[in-house]
Image 1 (tube, rainbow, N blue to C red):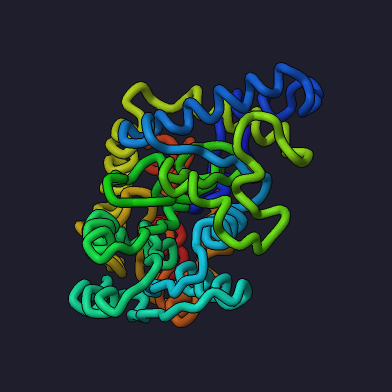
Image 2: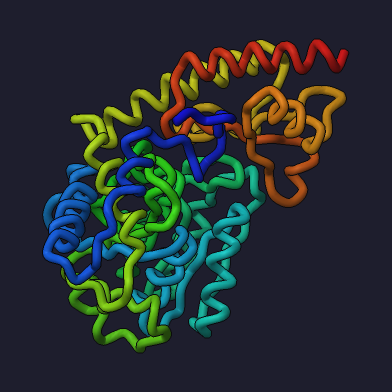
Amino acid sequence: MSHSKILLTPGPCMTSESVRQAAAGPDLNHRDPEYRQLIRETKTRLLSVYSDTQVGWEPFLLGGSGTLAVEAMVSSVIGTGPVLILENGYYSSRIKEILEIHRIPFKALSYDWLAPWDFDEIAGELAIGYEAVIGTHNETTTGRLNDIARLGRLSRSFGARCLIDAMSSFGADGIDFTNLDAVCASGNKCLHSIPGVSFVLVRDETANEMDRVPRRSYYMSLPMYAGDIPPLTPPVPALAAMRQALREMPAGGSVERGVDYSRKANFIRSELSRRGLRTAIANQDASCTLSTFSLPEGFTYERWFEANSDAGYILYGCKGDLKERFFQVSNMGEVSMDQLQCWILAVDEIIRERR
């Protein structure tokens, strides 16, 4: 099976033939012992993506998108609050909405979408007293890699839990788990699986306390997903695909994948910069999974997307006011250097035709 178009998007991303075949495998009932083997292997391999989580962390697999994992993490780990939310993009703003829906007291520190967190301000706020602080690692709105290691140290010093949305970084960008309490992501991004499975990794001490948190939801209550016997019908094909994708992780786990991603991201950034496009985020502050660039002169995003789609490549649009000035291209998933080189040739042709 061949792809008719190359996805240069931050999820869903390109997958391998064997991952797609795993999703289309034989029917399997979730009460079958074989399914329990599937879950055990998936959880074990998931904890092995980063060396820091092989001991002392518990994985919770969920049937749904990454946003489900974010909401399950927030509603299952946080007790009465208050919570400090760090907002510097569309996706961290979404967490604020989740807190509002679950009526969890919070305060948001809001920053320009192109700006980093202000740690002096964060420290001053944490000194007031918060149960937890929540931030996004790779804020997909721009591709900025927020400093969660520093945030973890700071939150620990003030006795606050640190919860991280690592949706577009887990599996490729480095994550220091030392002072984190819960991390959520999904399988259809840097793990190269199909949509349908998301997950939350919770530190053992925090997981042991979740039963004391007021239950705010039936489907999103993480303690219900402990162990390998599912309480509800799970997305078996998507789980089979995720297991296969984890089997295909490089031997060096997230470190080796990050090296490969960085090579591809550096190629994209170098080639687009040579063509006069500018990055929204400095390279040293950006994730290795995603690049945000100014639109070529004379193009709206809609026209730029259409031209690239006609050439066989799917790009990603920015959110809010950034949509009028920037676009995004991701090297996430099963995208080869050859495919990226061909895309750059297509970019040249599209710009040449416009002129």
